[in-house]
Length: 172
Image 1: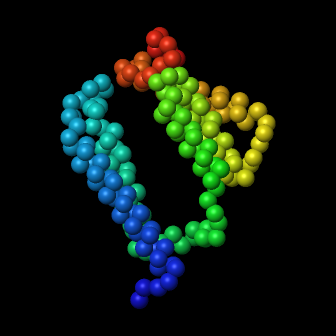
Image 2 (image 1 turned 120 degrees about the horizontal axis):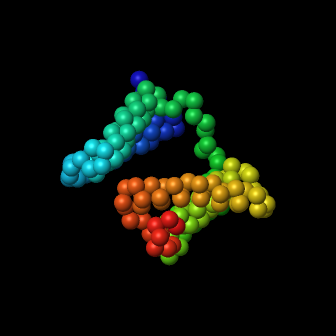
Image 3 (image 1 turned 60 degrees about the vertical axis):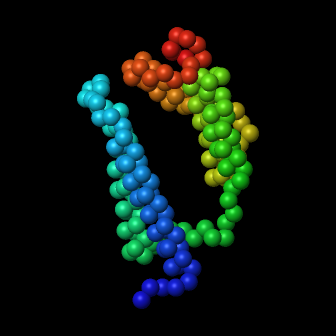
């Protein structure tokens, strides 16, 4: 006999999330069929990454469905009385939107740094760590540079993929 009430409703919602992840993985796998499999540099073709992501989504989706069918996430905290943190959400959303809006103007590296700084600020606010000090902003800027610059260089210099840059040198 299946339980009824709020617990069964949350299990049903967890099952729907798992089914959605499986469907997303299947859609990505179907899309990967349309990408040519010509082996490029190092024997990896352009369809390699979509297949990896599709298989990972399928594995995660199957695991979510299995967990939901076995009773759901039993040790999950109940957050039903809590309200969403709109301030943190606004900082995260602003970072993503500004990244998309400014990537062709200020380049990949600086737009990603800005996105990282704003997203980190939003995450700190949502976890209850408000700060008016400049040290976290400077640290996040440095970390953002240490992440985005090597990614930019790897894509432009090693893979030959054009990303928007601030200069024509290919280094920034």
